[in-house]
Length: 57
Image 1 (cartoon, rainbow, N blue to C red):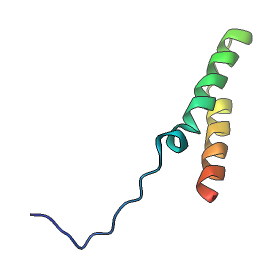
Image 2 (image 1 turned 180 degrees about the vertical axis):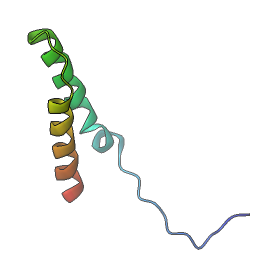
Image 3 (image 1 turned 45 degrees about the vertical axis):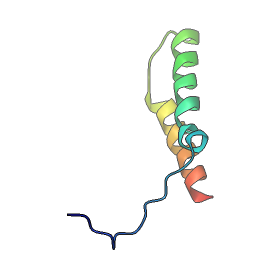
Image 4 (image 1 turned 120 degrees about the vertical axis):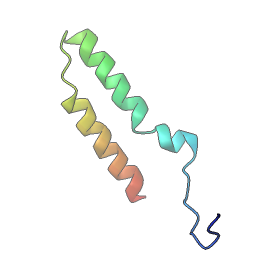
């Protein structure tokens, strides 16, 4: 049974959806190679900040 009265869910474009993901993975890689340490909270916090800025637009 299909409910046709539900509102459409907006879907972002692929580049917009990947905007927070790509820099976060890049920062994790740089941090892991450069500092020989893997502490994900800092890059993940930066990714959350990027996501917040993109969502605010």
